[in-house]
Structure formats: C-alpha cells, structure tokens
Image (cartoon, rainbow, N blue to C red; front, side, top):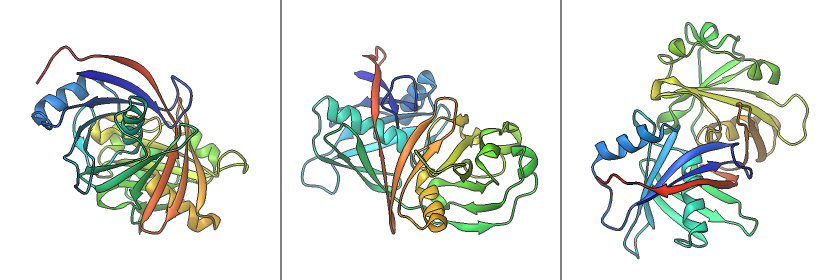
Length: 272
C-alpha cells in the first residue's frame, strides 16, 4: 500500500498543513483499530483513508479521517490532500464525489492544479463567553459562536490581527471548553492578500495547534462574509507553517479552494 504525506492549502513544500493519505482497494476499509494505529504512527493532525465505490452510486470514493487519537466528522485539508493524490496519480479526473460522516463532499480540479472542495456551511449560533475561555486563550473575546455538530468548535472573535497572532494558549485548559477545538479569528490588519486571520487549537482531539484547518473555514466564511459584505474571501491561518484558504459562500454550502504538494511517498510495510 502506498502512503503519502501531502502539504495542503499551500503550493510550497514544508508549509500549509501536512496530511497522511492512504488509498485502499474496492474491498473497503480494514478494521478501525488499524486505521487509528496508522494515524498515530504518522502523528499528523489528520490522516485520510479512502477506497473506491462501485460505479453508478451517489459517490465515487468513501473517505474517513483520523487524528493521532480519534476519528473526526469533517476535515478539509486531508480531503484536499486526498483529492490531490487522486488527480496527480491519475486515479480520478474532473469532479470527485466523496461520502463521509458529514455527508457528500465534492472536489473539483482546476487547470492550475488548485482544487475546490464543496462542504456544508457550518451553522453559527451566538454563545456567551464560557468561564475560563479568556484565561485559557490569553485574550479577551469580542464574540463567541458555536459552529454546529460536524465542526464542533467555538469560533472566537478577537479585537485585531495582532491579538490572534500573539496567542499563547493554555492547551490543557482549552481542551474542556468545546467538543473539538477553538478557532480564534480577527479581521486582517490591512486588506490585501487576505481578508481575515485565524488560528485553530484542538487539544481535545490530540492537536494543540493545527497549521491550516479547512473545516474551520466553513464557519469562518459565513462569519466574515456577513461582516465584510462579500461572499468571496481569502483567509490566512497564521500558524507557524501558515496557509491560505479561498472561500466562497453559497448558502448552505461553502467552497474551499487551495493547492497541495506531495512531499513524501512510500510503502506501508505493515498490513491490517
């Protein structure tokens, strides 16, 4: 079995968010324990596993995502990484349909090598500021929103870009404040290459800080589109590795566009 590491939401190696990608044959997924062990071995924020489905159905590939410690409902960067592998290896062309825990997702390849993912838009609902959140983040929230069942994060607006970039959270304290994690965000200090910044912290699922979180942008897109008055935006996730996500709000769906680069390819020597 070929196994790959792909840097997603970037066009340069060693930036963006690395994801593991392992494709199985039409026989389907092996047992969950094996998938979890592979994800723990790679120790990336997500490892994606996929297998082809019979032709004529509602989807072309089945897709699952695992952090080093658990399976998750939705992952943008590992979906982008999987689509990149399918297209660069010739396993798929055009638009690819995936079936996953969060429903049907699609990926469309463009001539420049970028890919657009079609994901469900996260439902946002205002929340009171949880006790201990400001202390755990090290910054005072301007507003807090819940992002719904599939994303499962708290979206936390901060006063400015500098506040987001300067965060040094208490990860142990953050772990108990949401189902999955905390997305900190603010408007860009100056409008140019990006419209807003974010950082994503997910200690509850084994990831202190995620480099670039595609699924979080299904919440960031409606949040910032409402404030900036535009459906087409670009978000910068201001982690140490950094990455850009272009978002297009389409009502109940959000389009996420980015590039990816395969940096490691090898053979998995241990089977299920």
